[in-house]
Length: 446
Image 1 (cartoon, helix red, strand yellow):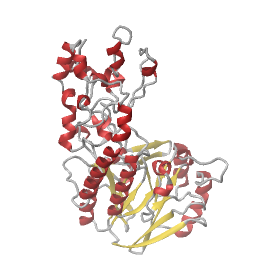
Image 2 (cartoon, one colour; image 1 turned 180 degrees about the vertical axis):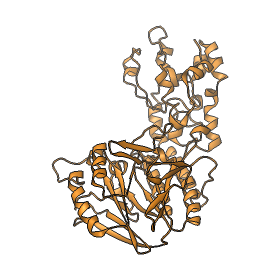
Image 3 (cartoon, helix red, strand yellow; image 1 turned 30 degrees about the vertical axis):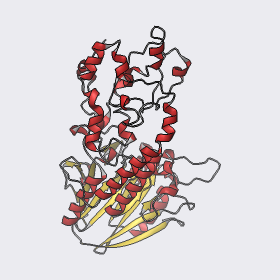
C-alpha cells in the first residue's frame, strides 16, 4: 500500500477450509423495520445480531465485512441512532467497515474510533484503516475499500481527501503483486466507470458493492457492467450476503437462501428471525431516549401550536357529515392505536404518518391566503394529552390545514389531494402492498 495508509494485520485462528465471509450495510438509518405491514417487515439490527450469532456458532471461522452507509440523515434523533448503530456494530465484531457517503455527510468525527473503519483510497490527511489482512492457515486475505469522490463533499480549494480510481489502481496493483494474497476482496462504492476500471485490472478475486438501489420493495442484488456483474448487498439492511471460502481450493460457494454472482448468496431477515436478547436492551434504551427527546421538544412545538392552522376532523363533521362517516369507518380513524400497540407513539419518525400536522407539507397552488401559501407543516400534533383532536390520520392530512377554510369557506377551499399525497406515507416497506386503485375506494368521498 502507499505510505500514509494504516495497515492492520489481524491474525485469526481460521482453518484452511470453509471460512465464511458475511457482508451487510446500507441501513440508511433503518435500525428496525416499522412493522406496519408483514410484506415489508424485513431487516433490522436485532435480526442481524441473531443471525450473526447463529452463524458464528456453526462457522467459528467467520469474517464480517460491512459496506457502510448505515447512518441516517443528521438530526437530534439521528444522533441517537448513530450511537445505537455503533453499539450494534461493536457486537457484530466486524473485520472492516467501509466509510460510506452517509457517514461522510454526518461528519467523520462522529465515527467510533474503536471500530475498524476502512478507506483504502484515503489521502494522508485521514487516518482510517488502509487495508485489512486476515490470516488463515498460512494464507492471507487482503481486504480493501474504495469510496468514490463523486459520493462525498470535498472542498475544491483543499487537497483531495480521497484519491481517484486512476491514482489507486496502479498503486494497488503493484502492492498486491508483491504481497500475493490467497484472496483479495474489494468493498466498493462508486460509479460504473470506476467499477469497470477495477474489473479490468483483475487484481481482485471478489468485488462486493454497496447498494445503489433506493427501493427496498424491489431489491437489486447485482451490479452489471460491460465486463460482467458483481454481487450487491440489499438496501435498508434487509438481508445478509455470505459465501464459504475454501482456502485450499481457492473457491467461494453459496451457502444461503438466494444465489448471487461470484458464489455468494443472501439470507433475508424476515419476521421469523427472533430479536437478539443481548442487543434488545440497547433498543429499549434508545426508545426511552426518543421519548425524552419528544418531551424536550414539546415547549418549542407548543409555541408553534399557538398559530397552528389545523382544527381536527370533528370541526369538519358539521358541514361534511357523509365524508366524516366514511372516514370514521376507515383504518385512518384509528391509525394512532397501531403505534401504541408497537410502543412507538413517541417516535416522531413513526408519528408523522399517524397524526395530523407533524409531517412537512408542500403548499397547494389552490390556497389563497398568504399564510397558507408559505405554510410548510409541522405545526399540528404535539401529544395525545395536549392535542387529542389531532391524533389519527384525518381530513387535514390529505386536504391540508382547515382553519382558513373554516374562517372563509367560499374563498379558501381545501384542495383535492393528488395520488402523491397518499404515497407520502404509503411508501416502501411501510406499505408494500399499497395500490391506489384498490385503496382509494375504501376512503372515497365527496
